[in-house]
Image (cartoon, rainbow, N blue to C red; front, side, top):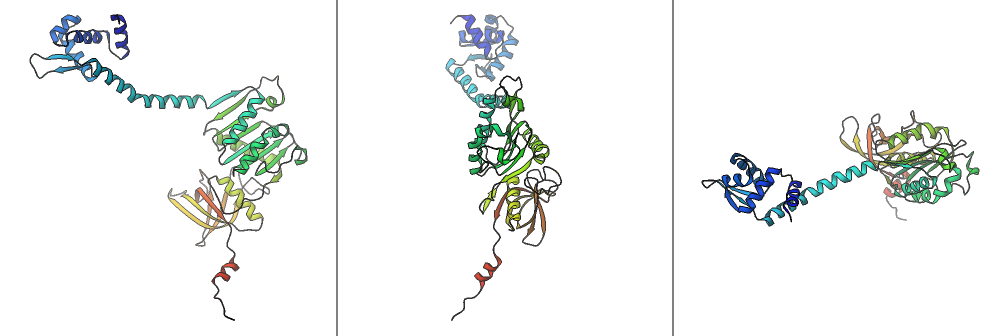
Length: 367
């Protein structure tokens, strides 16, 4: 290797031109006094001492200041290379973590220019849904994602669906059985909106799904700060304007939900069937921010998912629970602040039949 190439490679490791000259002089001498190195490198002796300390910190040389005069020894190249390799390996995780963070940031938004890609992204997001999906889509395109919706419902995902450009259930080809937890229709064409688990989704203008020659574009987003805003718009602006046409039967009990809107829907369906479901709520007191577990009977719900709605504002979804101690506690979901308890996990069970309890405790009689 020629000197120029060697100098260039050493500079890549942060050595200045004079540091490179000093280090190469030391390599040529093996071990030498500062004055010898200064003469060979064309620098002052004071500078050699200063540079040697810097090179020693990085493992290139060793300064023998316990002898008089002080000498400087170049470390064997294998030791230097192993040290550099170790340093490179040590910084790799940090570099990769930051690089992946940048990758995630750049992937937060995707511009979509075709109907086919919009449908593909919707299917993919529904397949990944764990807890909740809120979707509006035109009646003409429902068939393309029907299987994905049915599979999500079968997995226990809360699916709130608006079918736009449809007057009623009779206008929807293939029917609505199994496609959502609650279905509403709207006679006008509305934007295609999808949010999944309050973390990701798609927004597409009606023209993009209707026409192939439009220059309108859709956005796929993956941002936890944006998704709740889209959900709020869906529940606050579009959902109330649509007409309820189908509601799935309540899920078999017992059942547990981390998604609180699903908890409220299931409890509401039970209440309207004349039942009084029991819940065990794990969460925290909103005023004291301390952990709490509440058990009791659901006596009321505040919600806007099924008719008749009882909430006072669009995103209000809460339960009123009469605890086993006879107290009344209000329970809300993530971010609750007007309720007494913010729930993390709720278990819903059927209320025990009091007559069965009495029979179970009654002493058997002999005939």
